Image (cartoon, rainbow, N blue to C red; front, side):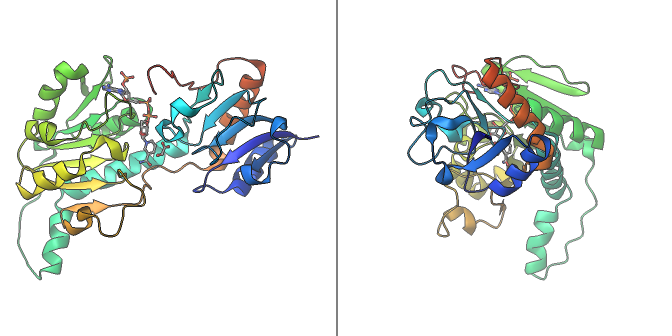
Length: 310
Ligand code: NAP
Ligand code: GLV
């Protein structure tokens, strides 16, 4: 008899995950929640969001593995009490997030966003290349993903600053911590990349107040969560010239409705929550390790501190 891992995601492929796990552990079956026959046979769950009916029927669940680095989409208040939760840390996710952050930064730094608009306007407007030394990049959230983004930008030659809740040290990155140091951090950046975890403390942190603290003509890249950004404040800051442009991967409502005013701003590039991508073949080993740990009652890799929210 195979041991059952419940799978719940409308964005990911259960068959690809099932094959990646079975290739290493043929005794484990990854079963989409719709096909579960006996809820009590489920020992572990891999999910982006819980099944519509919640998890209360899975009374033998020993652990939950988020199918993402973030966990807020699982609604921590609705999870079964006492069942531990882990977030996913994986090289494929880190690599894709770093690539996205570099692409967005270079696009704004080299003015490709402006040249795209000038192309459509049939405009030839020569400007020499800017210097990286004049373009400090700030990374909000320097955990697993933000830390890798900061290091990659540093290696490209940008001056890099980082901001986190607790004090962090990354070689070659000027690190700031806590709300008291946020204004100083923001004032030094030409471009800010948000890779924070979403918690009650960080919700709405990209707002009119924080935009006003940035240098006039700064850029914003949001690859954290949509609820980090007050979208109306960004549009107003762009209209006022305080923010010169933005690259947004995450939104308060996903999919972003076709009539949303963000689509009307030529200074904003919208991508459909694609910054980070997890390859099942890369991450299956971590999922299996956490299955083993959860059924043995041990702490999972990258266990979430539910009180802290990330
Ligand atoms: P992580 O390692 O837990 O890092 C989270 C960072 O947020 C840490 O640096 C943490 O500070 C900081 N933070 C949390 N609360 C804070 C606060 N109140 N003030 C200042 N800093 C605070 O998480 P990760 O793996 O890097 O992932 C980060 C986020 O990226 C995820 O939660 C998810 O929302 C997002 N994400 C998006 C995509 C996408 O495709 N767009 C893909 C993957 C992940 P400390 O270092 O002091 O703990
Ligand atoms: C994606 O958004 C993730 O949290 O991994």
